[in-house]
Image (cartoon, rainbow, N blue to C red; front, side, top):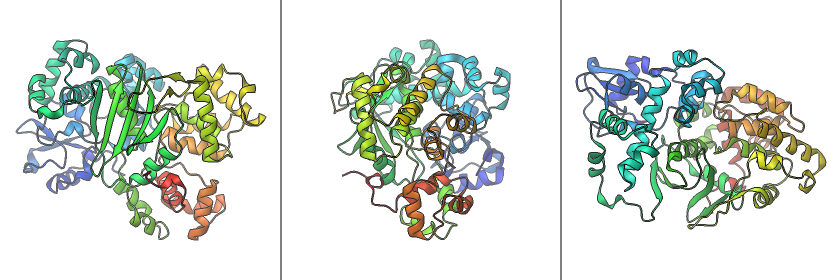
Length: 490
């Protein structure tokens, strides 16, 4: 773990001098002589150590008066893995800011969701306050739209969250040392999308990334109408704050291609943030794999296919509902149950490029259904109706700001929620990198074949050495099976 790495001058200097891309997003190098900030892997000749200072975020660099490097484009670095591997106040706040809460609800809304005062939140955030972090995100969104669309600048300013054209122009000039029109002029003219209204973006990640289990899991468990695998891309509908969207995500060697259609462009930064989170693109695979390969049983699995990610979700409430539908049934049966709910209670959408038909039903819609219409045992029907009722009335909230321990306790208190259901929600919805599934049938089968302890208690004791990355160990253990979730669809 590299918590607060920007304060370790010696390690940061070494990373910059070796142009180590593994540290992109962990910290940023600000050059005192040029007033420019870069990612560690910037291709230019490294500055002298005495001319370097380091910050934990692009927002902190911008707040200190540094401009983004035009060569390495540090504003497009992968996000810091720190915010997705922790559940403290800072990490929860950073996830909420990434989800656009400050732009929608202001700093009071951010503080209210976290249960702290505005002053407490501002004091805790590293290097930059919530407004500066939100401003940096708006600038990055504006740059994406400037470079990937032919939209008028006024529409871009509005979509990126700026309150006025003047603020948009001033911010872009200050952050990138170029006017919006100059940013657009630097991009090759062939950039215009082939289909009007479709945004084509590249989502960066830290190498290595093994797409097999990541996209395989999403495709194999896809709910018809909401998700599909088509022409080498995982596609799904998105329920977003201002409207809805459809995204197609295609794995490439050095990036994930993202094809995005939105009913309201203000949802762009949130859609990107949620897709990155679903694909676990801000993970630090080197740190994860280095830890797991210290176990002689896991080492060959890591060596064979390094860089496995944890497939997560774009909607925590949706995943919790689907976890209940998947209790003690096959993947195919769970998909059938979910598809019936989608057809009966989902909101229709149009998809000119594929076969998507609906948004997954909201908790409010599911709470209003007739329980007798659910084709499941009465005990699971009670589990389902209790969950959706609490999600709908707000007494249970699952979101990027959730305190993992508190959310687990609330879930365990629900009827029909045992350790497996709670831990799979912890792993794939809440994003806990240390969630573990010792009672899972696939895990127990893999443990037995590999010579690991196969009883839950003994396996949990052995897995203590894999902490804090047990959710990733789950992916490597699952991958020993021939289940479709482990293979990239053809």
